[in-house]
Image (cartoon, rainbow, N blue to C red; front, side):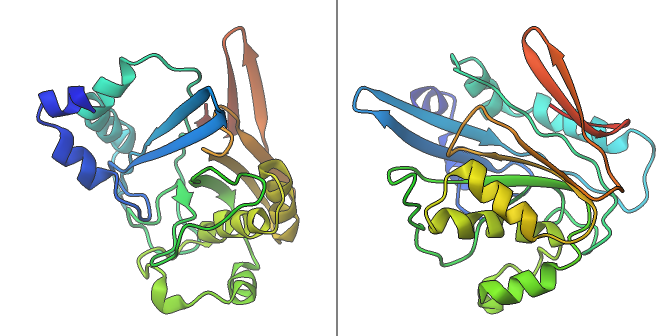
Length: 237
């Protein structure tokens, strides 16, 4: 934080780190207490861009330029880290409008919600980030079962992907750990899809799921990293 203040970036950081549905430039910060002597902080940067019709490679180039110019990201990237993970995704929306709000990843934010209590992680704040290749055919029924007040939901987020982190959160509230909550949530979904999920509840881990026959998941292993992909031209790292 001291370095951000010295560079005149602290006000920008405060604005970008407010709780909400993640948009281009969002910063997520979550402290964790593993033991009395071990405390860590997870920092998440999100970059999004969209175009209804555009040139090949335009979105990727836009994102690269945004990341290169992000001075806050550069400050954080210079710090020592225990682990680093990245989710990268491109998708033509099949549910919901083509907007920045509907670009993946999608998180579990709900307006006016008091911090939920997860019995398995009593001292942790959580952000659940999800990307989807495919469709959640029964997302409307699952929304109804959660009995969410739609007036409190962001009406700009219309993608079916939003139900994934909310369904995971449902099982976390019931006392399950993250892996079991992810498994139970995926079992609730109908349709064909591949899902990737990360959460600062268990930093450094990537959760993958495949259902149906319309998608695939490839896993590549190298000496210092794993690489995941759902389509030949879409890579998740």
